[in-house]
Length: 179
Length: 168
Image 1 (cartoon, rainbow over the protein chains, first blue to last red):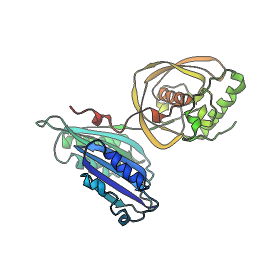
Image 2: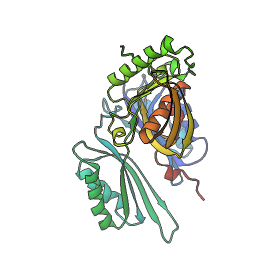
Image 3: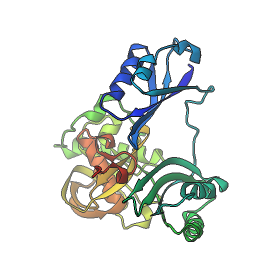
Image 4: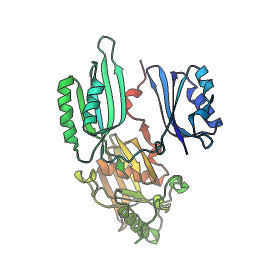
């Protein structure tokens, strides 16, 4: 079945999820994976959806028109076959905390270090905290360390970055207990 | 000896409250054997509870000694537990758990750091032991199964807790 990625964003208020899912339910859509959260003052929703009756983006026509009228922005992406399935990631799941005085490039420098080493970021949250005079940037990320790397290697790479960026970085294993 | 099929949610037997074993020799040895065989056969598993193989009795086995995480810590090796009960808990820790009966999903769960558990062992002897770390987590997870709780009922945070605090 054709799957689509649906992104919806707008000023946060009660009732957004209910409005969106009412349209999806009444239109015969299935929601597979989804993640929704408040970012700044905006509520953002990302959903992987499918509908046995719909195979192209054009067939949505004005399904989400009522949401646009309520000042929500709606974007639909057509997934390639298999794009709804997460590929199997092997390795060790790690948590990296990065925090310090706000400055440009924190996310990029850390992400580049990881990307260059083929470390897949599986989840990432950032937030600006503290007062306006002394803003503090906090980034939490989960990443999959490939099987040929050790957590000590990651710690060493991050140690160098810590010096360079003048931020605090800590790394720990997020081993899942399979019970 | 029998390797049993591990039940997968939404099998309703996973949500039942299990009955205590009244007549030890009648059923306990067989269930314990099946649990150990099934746990060993599952390879990565460090514990399994009777309802996971469809036996609705208060029986569970745990063995963290062969797992990457568990063997680094003090542990009791293979624990065969009949009518187990946690009688004391201390501290708390957040761990990410997965379960054979709920494939493809993991969640952050708050568990006690240290527990005292009492049970009848495979020789019908009453044991009272203190467990810490991974072994304590595994026991809490397996004993939850005996009351129809899955780790999904215990998930304490979505992603990082840090960002979920109330804005001033």
